[in-house]
Amino acid sequence: MAWTNSKIFSATMEDVLENTTAIDLNADTINVALFDNTVTPSQTVASANTAYGAGVWAAGGVGDTPSWPAVGRPLVTPGVTFSSNVVTFDAPDTVSADATTDLASVFGCLVYDDTIVTPVADQGVCFNYFGGSNSVVNGRMGRGL
Amino acid sequence: MTIPILTTVRHWYCPNCGLTDTTKEARPHIRMHTCPKLRGLSAPMLPAGVAAKVTAHEREDYVNGEDVQVDENRRPVMSIVTTRDEGQDVVVFAPTAHARST
Image (tube, rainbow over all chains, first blue to last red; front, side, top):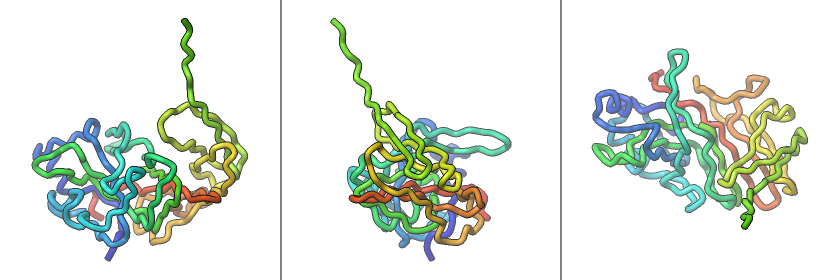
């Protein structure tokens, strides 16, 4: 198995609605960490296994410090909107920190909260499957979410 | 005493459709535009003076019900790659993640 889809973690949504976690998608630092095709993400894992560095996200990370570190690049001015019965979490496109980025075999990303420490540090919000392999050579990575 | 306020002006062009533009953003950024020569996709522009080609790449896997970016022919597009003499940039169109389980 490997990447097959893009999903919001069910456990995280439950934690937010039950006030188990104080995740604030508008105000917290939300990171985007890149991964190769060795991970098999699941929407239905427990809260602890949604986190960066836990579960399937403990290995397979792709990074190039400081251009796009393995811990990810932060979303700039993320926000939550509501329209036509759909709640959407979005942010302007994220770009690597410089034009000398080297990244190989990027298949997807984990979007997680880098601010919240308890009850789950770096709790995941969602994962996105890019649909194939993407690489950057001495250049810049840009990503629309 | 007059103090000049310096602003970084960057000039951009598209090698496919020929559009030119300028930006004054100080932070790292890529100027995007809807390119009529690249199947209507939102494509990056290049800094003036940089020779490169900009190409769209179709999704390599099944769509599998994903909310993917499509071009004007409804083909799923995974990324736009800018190939320069000394490197390669990529803009990835990440599918939208949904909360529903199916």
